Amino acid sequence: MSAGAQATLRRALPAPDAAAPAPGWRDQLITSLVVLAPLCALAVAVDRFWHHGIGWFDVVLGVALYAITGLGLSLGYHRLFAHRSFRARRWLRIALAVAGGMAVEGSLISWVSHHRRHHLYADRAGDPHSPWLVETGRFRRLRGLAHAHVGWLFAPPSSAATRWSKDLLADRDMVVISNLAPLWILVSLALPFGIGLAVTRSLSGAAMALVWAGGVRIALLHHVTWGVNSLGHLFGKRPYASSDRSGNIAWLSVLSFGDSWHNSHHAAPALARHGRDRHQLDPSAAMLRIFESLGWASHVRWSTPAAGAAQALQ
Ligand SMILES: [Zn+2]
Ligand SMILES: [Zn+2]
Image (cartoon, rainbow, N blue to C red):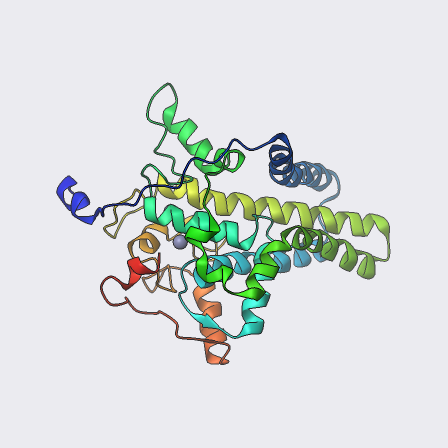
């Protein structure tokens, strides 16, 4: 895209929120734990796999929980709550919000606030996690990648819910679920342990279920989501005009439930289907079609909204 075309896409942006106070040691400790503990579980799992392999039970449970929490993030946090790409029955909204919380990526309202902010300022000052804002010094691309992937979590900007998520603050269900974020982390770990204990009837079986279907599953989804933020703004094809550097990364499409069609998404954020071409795999959109046919979801934005509507819903 030419510089002129880029310029015409740029809108006059409102000023970013005031700078957030530096996070205290307690916040840093919690963030470190959330980032590092699943990686420690992954290290244990790799060692275990090397010596003993992995049982079918752990594979099936891990994949099932990955799918539930991944859809909670992609279809729930991202498409339903951040972009309002469709409407869902109350029980489905609650289920998707809880499933998203079990992905251990922060509370619903903070996730949505940061994400809406990301779309408004994408790859410009004010974007919470652009890899392009490190502009000087050695290895700036690599440092930008690290910031976009995980570094920003340690010094997140102030994305005030009163500015970014007024609609969710007005929804009592969502406020309660968002405030209960620590509980969903507990559920996310207790579920594999409890199911593992019930099925294998042994503490070691429960522990391995916790490692694979808890820690490894969380680690994988973390880095897939964060990979869309980092790799998805540095690499990938750009079939659509957008005022940022987003790209489509095909090999991440299944693991990200379709969210890695990131350039297509940035070009029309309100669309429910991110893989806009027929051959582009988009598991969240496929699941949404099922929900729609069952009457659980409605008002789905399958086609391009009227001019301006997509931007209004960022
Ligand atoms: Zn993006
Ligand atoms: Zn988005």
